[in-house]
Length: 195
Image (tube, rainbow, N blue to C red):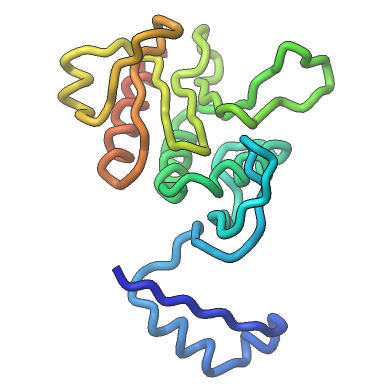
């Protein structure tokens, strides 16, 4: 893998007018993603320590309410497959009547914002069930409202069965590349159809 790092400083007007910047951008052979490594300081949500060189997420995390955007982006800073996680969220939230929710902590009171630090709950609006997917932005782990079976094992070889927890949510997969992203979307569609 070849990594090229270029840092150019200037006002937006100076950068727009720069022939050097224009040539550098034209030399890019790959598409520019919305997630990239960049020197910055972010707060690790697990330890409150400053950590350098987190992932920078530009734009909004699909489906996440404004109140949860900064929290989820901070979690994505530690996910090496942040772009694939965003792709998962973009696809799953494009399905009919899907909403993304934070959680109400035990101390939650009317008017309090939802908590987006643990996981995101993807839920089909109007469904009598809870979320069909629980998504953990910091790790890329997706928990599905499915029971593990031979069909699941064949459809998603990287999925694994949980041995404890809610008996309705017994299938997990960790998104770490395009292959696991495709498997996660297949499982999410199964869970969506079942709710």
